[in-house]
Amino acid sequence: MTIIRRPVKGRPTGIALGLILAANLAAQTPTPTDIAFEKFFAAESPADAAVLAEPLAAMVEFDTALARLKRGRAYGEEKRGEYALRWRSKSGPFFNNIVDVPADYDPATPIQLRVQLHGGVGRPSPNPPARGDKPSGLSTPNRIEGERQIYLHPSGWSAAQWWDEEQVDNILRAVDVLKRKYNIDESRIYITGISDGGTGVYYMALKEPTLWSSYLPLNGSIAVIRSPQNGADGEMYGNNLANAPLYIVNGEMDNLYPVYAVEPHIKWFQSMGVPFVFRPQAGAGHNTAWWPTEREPYEKFVREHPRVAHPATLSWETERIAKFNRNRWLLINELRRDASRETDLKDRGFFQHTKLSGRVDVTRSGNAFDAKVRDVASFTLLLSPDAVDFSKPITVTVNGKPAFNGLVKTDTATLLRWSARDNDRTMLYGAELRVDVAGGT
Image (cartoon, rainbow, N blue to C red; front, side):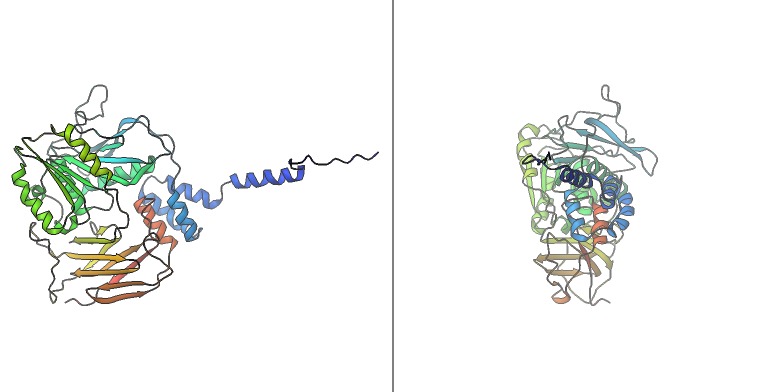
């Protein structure tokens, strides 16, 4: 008798089952590209990521890399509660940046980050006194505790004030570290501060704006960094606030920065078209007694101002090209005095200027860029697939004259290089377009 074994309907045969298992195993086995991306995402700093970017670019096509970068890293379990990020400053003491993570933080869900700058930045030490059983904790409770979010409290002192270059680097480093550990929503990273911290918020808006969604200076004054005796690094240009949504609070009876003293600054902002909300507090001194009633409009402002990764209009001015020369997708590469051309690109004289600076105001409409430029020999436009169509020509007009017209190819190396630097899923660039400005003296 011959017995014929027929497969049970709906159940794979042994051969088919083996093929399925083999396919599943292959799908679960990381490819060399998968491994390279995991190493890229696991890098501890932009410099480390940049080293890994070059070989990775040679392994993967542009569209594949773009999709993978938008998806980002897989976040795991990390510390909750309060702890410190510490590294040595150039002057010797350690920066003591306090992080506070909600107990119910979920790695699968993007979360908002508030960077909060304290007052009294002239203190001699970066390390505040112990609080209870937390030797690395804040010296006092958070005076303006808000919605569920991660908090970063950087440490500032007399040798590393909020308007020092090294302090800016400290803050950016701390934010980058947190973005590599926690699923932080890149469109909702904002900066606030009280007293000297509020003044520091103005400085960050004027010098390093790319990261932030909004700026909330409380009981501070932009005039502090106007005074040379306060030692702010670099020169300030008011038009750099054009893309900086400000929420400004000052007390009527503040003994340092009363409402009447900051009102001229408010009028100056208004004359330049700076986006702001001014909330003077009747009868208030140099304190935050107003927080219980001010909290809701403050939080509402934050919610209504997510960062726009690729704004259609940008304005930037700088006296330097090695630092503080970038605003989002615009970089100023080279300065050159252009005395032959009159321009209205001025910041209306609030700050004193002693150095040559260059300014670019640029608007994007589709693939067309229209720039007004003063004292700039060249600038770079960072082109994102989320903002331009690479299948069509890019056109650039500078001071009313054609400067570029043609197709621009996407480049995986460029994409990964800027991703390594920015560590940002929403701000990815497929090409750099350098624009040389005709004319000059």
